[in-house]
Image 1 (tube, rainbow, N blue to C red):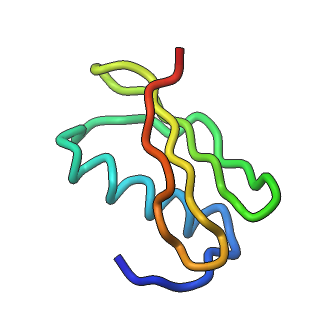
Image 2: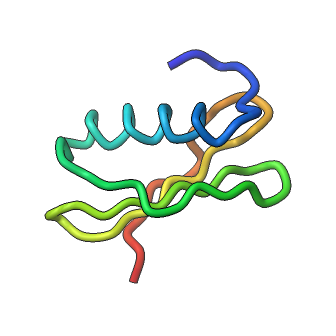
Length: 69
């Protein structure tokens, strides 16, 4: 993944999809992409459960990948 600014929700979703695929989650549905301050929060559902990926909007780095309880 490139380390560059993430200025739209579609770019954040693209990064989240790459992360989900690398984690072995092939089928998933994005349920939310929201910017909060300097971060994008992308939520998705899969057969393995619900997850959130937190992405730094300044450099595109994935900061957190965690299940949603």
